Image (cartoon, rainbow, N blue to C red):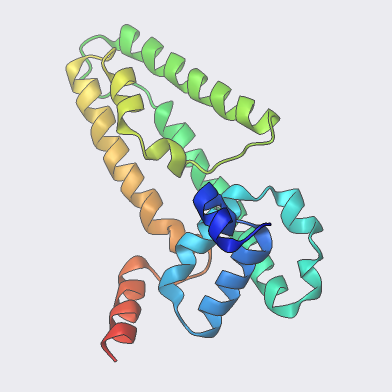
Length: 192
């Protein structure tokens, strides 16, 4: 017998079905709990391939159709933002570089590894957004060890800055207010 309790014990995936995510987004929108939406939209756009979003019967439900349009538009916006990460990895050595040729070759090799990984995941049908890569500093720190000290510092500094920019733009990708406004809305709702 499949009960909610047994599905919960199986792991956190029980609630990640497309229909459930669409309902969460529709309900949060209806009750004006907009601070929930960036995470819900992000998860939906990250976990669901475009063809699944386009081919679902949920288009026949007006509430879900609106959500699906927003998810697909946000998915496109995030994919455009993903290019910034790929471009960031492929940047040339910094102006204070001590070993230009070595740092240039290392940067090129790192960019190729990343693009290969992304291409491999796409061919396997997995297109996760870049935030999955941004989350782990250790991957980039490992790559930066092969750079000279000025390039390594510049690389990590650029990473932090670009990562912050990416994070700040997530609500905007789904046509939502920025994080600060969402935080104020949440605080206002819970103080009433």
